[in-house]
Length: 156
View (cartoon, rainbow, N blue to C red):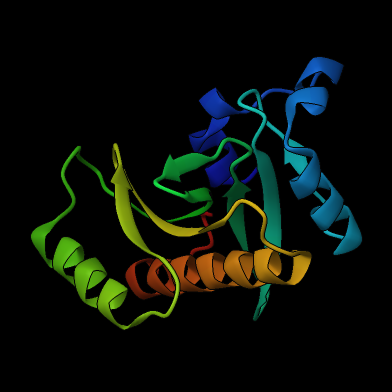
């Protein structure tokens, strides 16, 4: 079993019919139309494992829940890319992630406990094509940093 799935095991359970019913139906429709395989975790978020080339895969979560800021309603796509041995990211890694976030077109790095996660926020009404672009942006960015810091390891 992949390390990432173990790492996020506290978030994952086999989806019950209630969980599937509460997962965002628009995300489900888009993922189905894109023919992407997914699982739904206990928080009703969609988990996908994407092929990023070179024999590598990358984990991503598409959040069912959305957030509102003024007139904007957004959803997040998360992809883990770095795991620290402590609760603090090493200074050089944190600075690298800030620099990285400065040049990307979509998304940026955040810290979730010991894990650096690339997060893309997009409209909760995004089309299937826009959702796919956001997933691609998240997984490619996360995998690039994972590869940079782990060599050839493919944990996520």
